[in-house]
Amino acid sequence: MKLYHRIFGEQQRGTPLILLHGLLGSLVNWQRIARHLGERYRVIVPDLRNHGRSPHDPDVSYEAMAIDVLELMDDLKISHAALVGHSMGGKTAMVLALQHAKRVERLAVVDIAPVTYRGRLAQLFDALLALPLEKIENRSHADALLAERVPDKAVRDHMLQNLQRTKHGWRWRNNLQALRDGLDVISSFPTYESKPYTGKCCFIKGEHSDYIDEQSLPRINALFPAAEFVEIPAAGHWVYAEQPQAFTEALENFLS
Image 1 (spheres, rainbow, N blue to C red):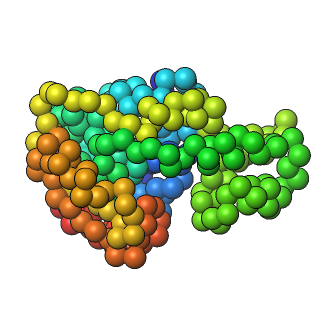
Image 2 (cartoon, rainbow, N blue to C red):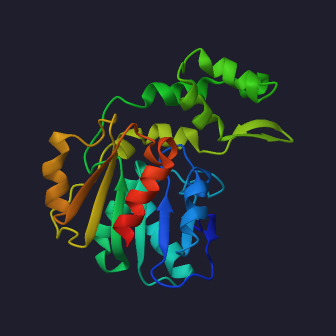
């Protein structure tokens, strides 16, 4: 699995920084933040498997996604890196840190916990899969069709970034069917009885998000005993997109 990726701040020295996007996202989600961080760090931003321009595969497990990132690090001759992951990307980063602690200099997890989330995304996937791609005239038409089942405009905008016009018509960049079929795997988190990750770790949550709550704290502290917690005011689940300045300041404080 060779992940498509972009590099910002190619000439920067020191510990590289790897940014991992969330479910149904792509490296495009991180570009604004990556350009800024590229002024100080060498920043690598991949599309995870089944997303963006990276290859598709029926295996959607976090173990597989973590190995993909590890192989990317090997290809780029990166011995260790600071990992930043949002949502699904955060779970991928946590698995990589737990399995290959020496390769992770520090870890920032954005608005997700190492727990199982149920019943949040099935309806969204079903709406995307039901979109009649052969009837779409343009992106505005696709938005209008999707609005019948996805009323939130911000969510639709985020999803429609993955819609691509080709010479054969419209198609999704994402491997939607594999992701839908593996949604229970993506919504969960592997069970670990091995050593926790004891490196520097920060969990950054949005004030109006419930992805990190009181019930998830014992699991976080068991697996990541050095965890710090930062809450970004006036932000929901897409913390870095909703409050980019406050998020970047919090992240840079942790990285430095």
